[in-house]
Image (tube, rainbow, N blue to C red; front, side, top):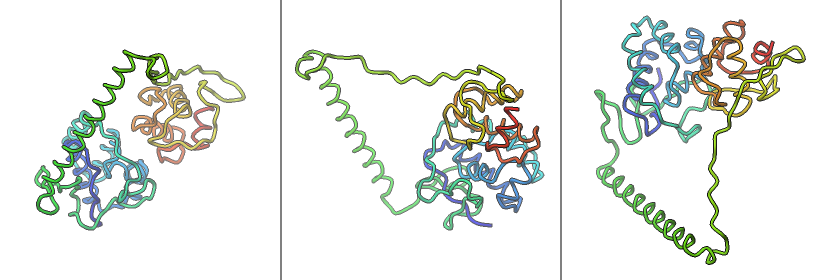
Length: 274
């Protein structure tokens, strides 16, 4: 069994402990990611993200893992619920040293103990983090953070002062003061129309675009509308392909007897538009 890679920095301790338990269950099963995918119905790329701390798995995936290893899911589901409440981290995809999505390989690293995740600068031990590295690393980190904080504060103060001058004397800048534009989220609706032998919801007419977790846009909103029309809730129509949408896609693929990978391609589009 390979050794686990460090988790992305910034994860809440409750999420770290939950992912650590997932990794221990995976180690206990002795299965590869592809074998785990075949046993649970969730793709290898999805498990790669779950075990790498880059995506929180849906409740059904947690139950499937517990069933695969023959464990009581009660405590694991309790940790999953706690991790859901603490989840608010957006880890960077493709960061140096991270396992690439869809590779099908375990997220492993040579220098960490099997089944024990590491966060940046520390290793999980008895439910806590111990600082690693050379002596003086913690004071150096604190010093750098202080410098960054001072720099940001100075820049913010300069910007506020400049704005105050321009508001009092707009002629100095050569332009009149204008209200700043406010970015607003794109609203999506489901306006169902049956045409050319298929259902459309008014967001996209694609029948073949590839969609997967972490993608966003009108094509994802169209997918979410079609899942709703099929009686499968994606959790909302917001144009973001998250864990709930992935879980709904997997349920649809099971219903229509398609290949189950949690991703959307021509066959899934055809089934949902039919």
